[in-house]
Structures are given as C-alpha cells and as structure tokens.
Length: 225
Image 1 (cartoon, rainbow, N blue to C red):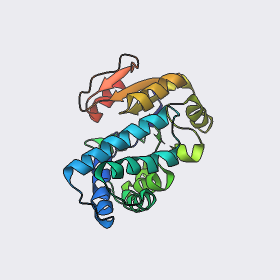
Image 2 (spheres, helix red, strand yellow; image 1 turned 135 degrees about the vertical axis):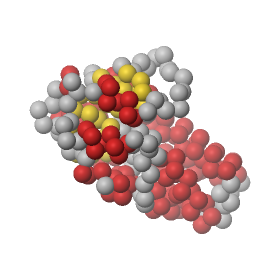
Image 3 (cartoon, rainbow, N blue to C red; image 1 turned 180 degrees about the vertical axis):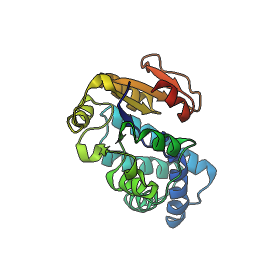
C-alpha cells in the first residue's frame, strides 16, 4: 500500500491552462497587445518549451520567466517589456483556481487515510496564491515548492529534500502522481519511488521514461492505491 502520495499541482490537480489563459487575457491588453487565440497559443508553446529547458538544467527560473516573453514579443513585433509582462502576469496567475475533474473529491477521499504532499516546480509566490485560493492546506501535510528548495523536479536533490522533510519516510510506501513524464515521472524514477502518469489527453508515451502506472482520469487512482 502507498501511504505517502506526492501530487503534482499544475494540470494534475488544478487546471493550469485555465489559469494561464485568464492571466494572459489581463496581461497582454495592459501591454498594448491583442490577446488573440494565436498569440495565447504561441505563448503557451514557448512557455512550455522554456520550462522543459529548466527541467534539463539549461535555464534558470528567472531566465524562463523572461525568455518566454522576450521570444513572444520578438515574434509578434512588440516592444513591450518582458520584465513588466512577468510582473503583471504573475499578479493575475496567483489569483483564483480551477480544479480538474475529480481532483477535489480524490483529495477529500485520500487525506484522512494517506499522507499527501504537494510537489511543484512553480514559482513560490504564484503557487502559494493558488494553493490558498483552492484551500489545499486542508488536504496536504506539506508543500514542496522548487523555488524555495533550490532544486527542481526531476533532479534527485529535489526529492532528497522532500524525503528528508517527511516523517518516517520509506520509499516503498511512496508514489508520485503527475502529468509530466519529463518532470514528475522521470523525477520519481530518479528518486527510486513508484510513479503514476496522469494522462487525460491520451498522449503518446516517451519510451525512454516508463511510468509504473498510467491513468486517464484521477478517479482511476483509487484502483491503484
């Protein structure tokens, strides 16, 4: 039985795509940019690519935050300030939340019998705002935010820190649940714990990163646990 469950936050429990779009709909007009579907979609693509580079250790967090806007503004011919964009964007991103289907029900079901911990690569101020908005403190024993730790998923050092702050931790009792193969699943493998890939979009697997389990809806998690 898995007594310790590490949950990723974005697009595992909370709908990050919703939060991102909402923040962009406020940020772009304030910089004189029309928030068209094409621009929002391109930002999302650039943003994801920069976070992948962070996971590989090729960019710092601050470089990620600025570079996604620098690249976007260059593409669309805008002279807007990436620094100002980050400031405005994060002020909106930390507000509000949208649970993914079954997410809150799963947390309510598990929190009384299992030790739940949140593991996220997100920015500290942003994630704390979203955690508070969603009322997640009632379900989780602790939150491990990479910016505060100094290491990111999937690096082993990140998980070593988490494990050292979980009372009576045993690897054989721990599982990580997340939507990212490159961050959550690879990280769990690096750390020597079991992994559950949350894959609602039925994405094609990366054969270099093999999860122990795959689910397409969060409620399927109960059959594994």
